[in-house]
Length: 359
DNA sequence: AAGACGGGGGT
DNA sequence: ACCCCAGTCTT
Image (cartoon, rainbow, N blue to C red; front, side):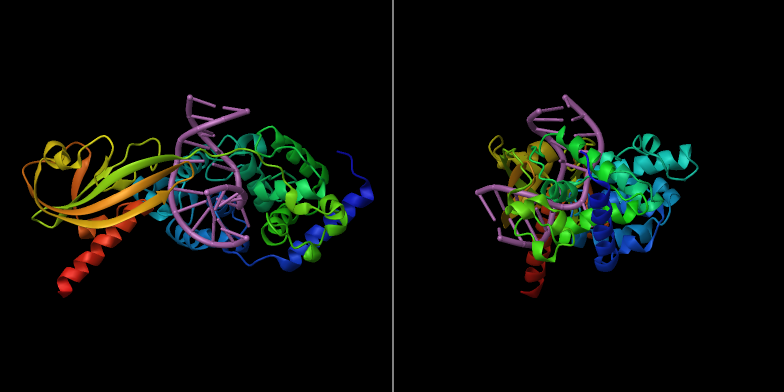
């Protein structure tokens, strides 16, 4: 890529001034603390600004410094992250912050070779922290930046391919305003979020439309090119809210790896494989007293669908429950990190319970 | 290079 | 129903 000096200068000026003028007032824009910028960037991975704001505020209140996060028990960390999704982000963030506390005396590294080695910090997050917190001229290429630059520069490579990202990283390094790296990078992202949107971009409001090849050619909404399809798997589960005579409920902790790792759930059995009647006595050492239907719904993940049917069971306890399952009171459940599908079932149980009390 | 990994919002 | 989102890690 080979831009003329004047073109580059004017593009930088237009973008940076637009950002300074029009930027949204967001919580993480009131600080330059690299730790807080880091937290915000991790939360923003594959997640919308509006979703992140309340999580960010609660998280920073609970863990104001790297030391606070480093010392937090995992259950407390996951409870803070509950509902935000991609829970390995939380674990990796804590692991990365622990590295910073231990190896760098709690100071986030200010250079790419060191910062990118931190757990959970990839090429984008590295560049975002370096440019936003330290004002370094580093690329921070996310989906917004690829969309904006694919249009401005008419880049028709498939952005689903990993190697394509390098093209955009080089383009940013070529274009970035050395006087305003933070505003330049954030300007590209802000433009992607507010103006240069995936469908129906607001080109007439765009501060850089005079530099935009796709706008001049007339079909900006057809870029970027992205192939790739997601094949979804369907899974079918029966889920049981199991209550004993002491008003305790049975929950199990998911495995430490994989989907929803270390989160808690009500006992769940795959429908196709198991006749769910035998599940109780065989697996959990209890006798059924009553059975009531709760809620049926689909929960859609990025790569699979859970088809859920849930039931409220009252049981008599024969002995200890099996391995990973534990009896909890309603009060204790409040402290457990539950994935959203389990929160829905728990909410449905509370509704029927309230109904019974009323009647 | 492809798949795993959440959940919500827009069209 | 399908796409996207301030991506990273694992295979």
